[in-house]
Figure 1 (cartoon, helix red, strand yellow):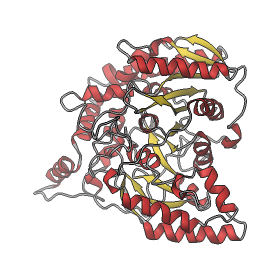
Figure 2 (spheres, one colour):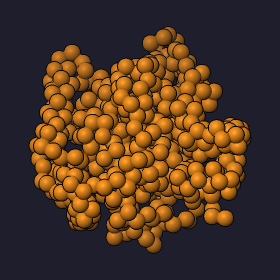
Figure 3 (cartoon, helix red, strand yellow):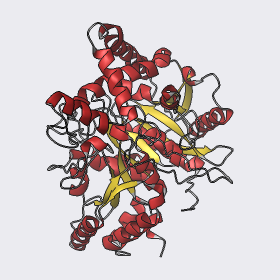
Figure 4 (tube, one colour):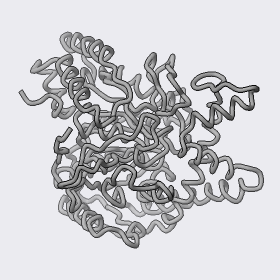
Length: 491
């Protein structure tokens, strides 16, 4: 029998239906893989007992012919999603051993459809980071390595645990969140597929908030088809989230393999950055040629306000974070440091509970929202955001179906290599991804090739609002042309 952990969700679904193996066997294979790969630090909490219990329930339902669309499929859950009676910390010391008495909407829909919970996955603290080095549980290791080198590499962030676990075959798929590239950048660094849906497509209820107008949940999976399968279960209207949009959820999987003939693909000239590595440029051209060979038409487009996206994002996101993180004060739950009075308790708890990057962003956010600076920074950044959104609207109004860009400015880098003295160096990793969040659009990252050191590189497709289906169709074309390449096992 094929190693069960190397199956795709689509393959596993067929195997379970034909009784080639059971959900319990599939779950046990993944639990053993997790145990053997702890060096990657992808999981911050393993839930083997819960997993076996859920697998047993899935087997019973499959036997009766009542299995849901994800019956028996073992998944990892980013530690930003509240899981009832299971510790949820956002990988921050300030949440301590917080055990939510409720379940996030996205995860409750996965369990409704029969999925199995393997455990909680590591992420940057409060999802603030581009390398998964800010977690209070320590950095995640990328299962990929440079040719002939033992240097440990980052898996990208903030959903680094999700990407690393999927790439290392420690789960069949994972939930993730994307505020400025936190699904697409880790997917590109690990040769996995990650989609950030349109803002409002997946409920944010029960997900620890970072920047409420930018955050969006989405899946990381091994193939475009698997991402489409997961997305169908994750998406949907939720009356508990006022930003959730009441539009029917299509069968995303039906978009896989659909013809892309006649589709117009925009190539934005502003994404050709000075000093962009030649291999990223080459990959971008190759991706465009693959789409053209499949019958799509390439057109040059202009997104003139792209250059302002990163600075505007790093005003909007910290401002919203500073507001959202005010609730962590040591009073109601989580860490509480001893003090002589309540003000000192707030100060001590927050100083000890938040890591450096979170403190940095809270300080920036509080500053840009303060009296006298609100108009100069936050208000102006929101105006820039409107212009960025209008750039995309103008492109789509001209009949463009999707926009093709690189996903990241480089392949994965070493743990500790970036951002030590200059945090802006780390922020530049989001240069190709933040525009999508600022405009609320869907974006998918698909593995497209490798760099000269043998590390994976990804391409990004940006779509029209609520048109994820087109992204799945186009993503599948790139995936078929580039082929799939698993990480060579060294752990």
